[in-house]
Length: 217
Image (cartoon, rainbow, N blue to C red; front, top):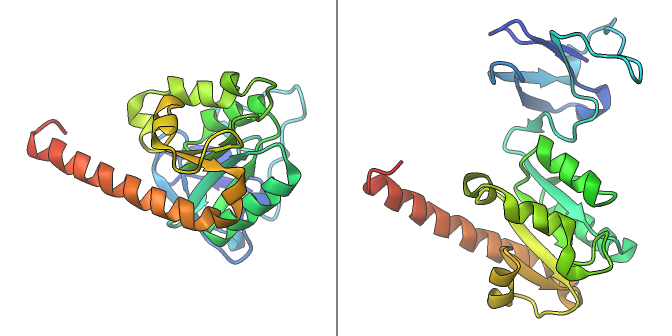
């Protein structure tokens, strides 16, 4: 699907399969960040051919085919799942689907980091043993730990583990995550996440209000 920004006249592409049927979505213009509203009915009848593998995309065209979320539905939430166990992953994905998250299922640590460079997820669930034999050297968690604070504070990170108890705040602090979830409690994931996210949102709302009162934002 070819899109033209009315504000700057920039041209870019969105894969047809990324636009849910019957849904209206918003996409920021890659050039001017103007918000563009798109729906499936706007598909062009003769879209420009996509660049072939190894072929450069024209300079005035933005190709979004390799990016997980260049748009989300209005009020949409996005989540990244980094879970190696297919049984646990099925439960996690089902739970997040019920919570109305748009989900990216990372294949490995490199895939997860690539996705995070393109999109800031509201929620990331990562098993400490994801794509590593040493849970204390998890590539995804290391990447998140290096993020700047303005970006990191907008991401809620839940670490899935078999070593530590659920809601172990000291271990969450030690691992630089928002929450620890033991695999034994994975069936209660929705309740655990909902409580943790609500508490986190409340904390940062108070934090931001305090900064405003101090004139620092």
